[in-house]
Amino acid sequence: MADVARLAGVSPATVSRCLNGSNVSPQIKKNVDRAIAQLGYRPNLIARGLRKQVSRVWACVISDIENQFFTALVRGVEDVARAADYSVVLCNTDEDVQREAEYLRLIDAQQMAGVIISATRTDVDISGLARAGVQVVSVDRKLSQPVDTVLVNSHEGAEVATSHLIAMGCRRIACITGRHDTTTGEERLRGYRESLRQAGMQVDPALERYCDFKEEGAHAAALELLTDPTSRPDGFFVANNQMTLGVLKALASQGLAVPHDVAVAGFDDLPWWSFSHPTVTAVSQPAYDMGRAAGEMLAERIAGHQGPPRERYFEPQLVVRQSSQLGTHPAPPESAWHVGLPAPRTSSPLSI
Image 1 (tube, rainbow, N blue to C red):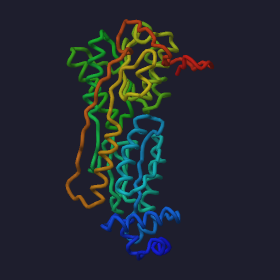
Image 2: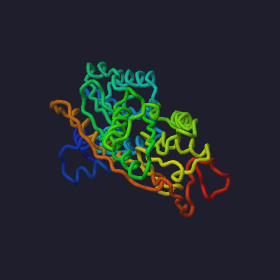
Image 3: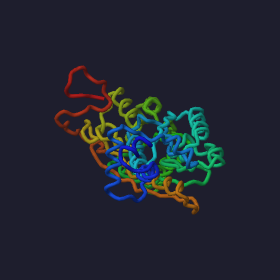
């Protein structure tokens, strides 16, 4: 910093004010920025944090980095963090409770300023973070401890998707949902059940399966539901995008055509659902906006907001495509992705 100050013709204190965003004249700021660029100066964020008794790092603890929903969510968090002069450390738990606990201990030990977490379960212990003064915002899943929370209305999204399958003629609809110790898994199951009740249909526990929000688990669950041809489902509501892919692969492996034989509607949209064959009906979540909202809440808490825990809900949207149109034979578009089939070695058409 002293080298920058000499080159810019100002004091080290003025350089510090420029770096901290304090008011300085435009010309001085220009001179300091030019000196910083010429010398390749990089502030020591750890040292700055120690002097100010506050870290400039957030942790973002998510359950599955392979899930496109979390990729978009983290982007929203990061954009807010960068604007507030924070860095983000990404921690992927892979739905592993032990790995999550290790990350939370690391966050505490590193004295990070805050954490945005999509927890593996509702009762995850964040008491150590609270004692250390680490601010916590929960996203996508609620925690039993009171913290700021950003959610999508999972119950409503599941209810709308299941009602759509009923309207398309499905009368034996299976539900493959997430873990029972997560609010997303339970709320989406509740929405599915409520839709059946409103339609005067029986809720049949034999058509319900809990999974780990992973493709492999949903694939196995779908195969189990398809073992008896006389009682197989004619529709599937699936509680996230990874599991939807597992269900589609299971149906393809059994020679069942979607949507002619079985209709499918999932929760979480994916960019390629709109050009797969068939295109996939899904409940869309505003993942990026949810990440931004979580980041803004965390920044406000770190800045001193003292109000009670807040909850912000985002509304889901059902995107209707071909996979839910029971009994139809949708024509494939050019260069379609054939959902559920193994990928060929040729370059086109590409299959997943």
